Image (cartoon, rainbow, N blue to C red):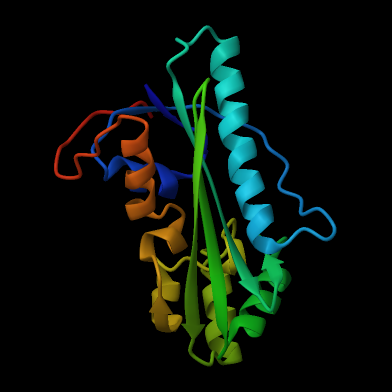
Length: 202
């Protein structure tokens, strides 16, 4: 059975669109970039760590050995610097000021892990923000939406208005690139049925 190693409701909703039943497994993986590690390597490593931690947790709970675990990570990157989740409102303002009027990258990595194999995909999406004035940034931060979001914004929310141009995967910016995820699932013998409806564990 497929399991999602993530606590993100956005990632859960995106995976549900593929029409496959899945369970969830909570993992606690440190998201700390190693000195000298590139942004892309960092995102892929965290996604892989989540998948493997989920697989281990399931094995320890007595889950059947045919479990497949999906781990994913998404980060905003500007000039090679990873913009993680803002620590507070001031940090969110700092991030949005830096992104204002600039093109940044959103790197989203997906890793599928089973007892006998692992497969991965990394997607880079270019996102260009319009110039944001101080009042707009302040109002957006005050809305609370930037909290817990990489780069201090949610493209599926109010920040949709900030995007002047995007080249790549919209779902990848939200947290799970669906086309690439579907391709990985097929390699594990799982057939996405995006127009079907399945119940999955909350």
